Length: 113
Ligand code: AMP
Image (tube, protein in one colour):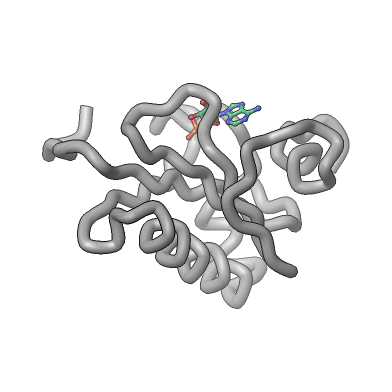
């Protein structure tokens, strides 16, 4: 999709610190990490948010979740990590290409701030 930052990263047009890539998804380190491990998992195809992804491409949603698990295990946080899908501007979503935040390697408090 034109003018989508994460489509440009998925296409390789904008560099990122990629930790996993397969036919369906890529995962890269967040540029402003909120935890020692903070990786974003995105589908290569464009969907605005996780609700649209689930409706439009449920199999791709499963690929995102599987990749998040793989990333967590590869980053040494398989025993405890947080997955966050900010959905909509009111929830703090700033990039409207669905992405799972994989967060860990520190105490994660609840409720989230
Ligand atoms: P959200 O606020 O849930 O939409 O999350 C968007 C995330 O993308 C934020 O945590 C940003 O720090 C991150 N981000 C923005 N630009 C980049 C980039 N070029 N490379 C990696 N992460 C980015």
